[in-house]
Length: 239
Image (cartoon, rainbow, N blue to C red):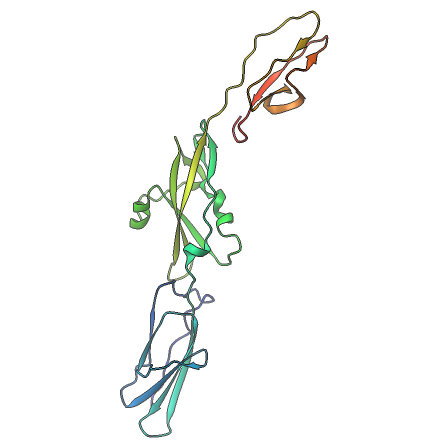
């Protein structure tokens, strides 16, 4: 009386899982001489009695097809899996903060954080505008060495690696911070010590450049000797 073949299913394991919001038609290919019962996870689906079934949720689907008034019947089952809404699963990236003297940055440094707690293989694509992302144009081909001249927002497409290429869209904000200018002092020659003057907020004295060596405090008196003092200016990110 025939047979029903739904194939190997659409699953994560075979990289054919369907995207959130998609649908899929299971078709028995049998004629109206059969009567049908459809099941999802072994539970009868009410009012589904046709030769095909449209599915929109993950589950194991089974059909029982009975031939006419006889006791002859055939059945088949298949696992269909769907991704959850990736926009809800993929995390929003933390903004990238760079100093305003930067020329190139690595856009990919937020990828691991976006996938925190998520299993599977994903592909990241970067675009300068949302319209470019939607049209698949002007792909940023050098995301690890992206040229930048000021604050901007880059749009990230996070795609599954499977056959159906489901995706999420996220905004990656790049924020510029000014490089602070440290207070400058002329060389001093004194006879009886020197009291370090007050500095603006975020600036400190050190015995070596780059905020290294011994730290001195404003108001501290330096005794006899020769000192090379550096003023280190920082806004936590840039110096």
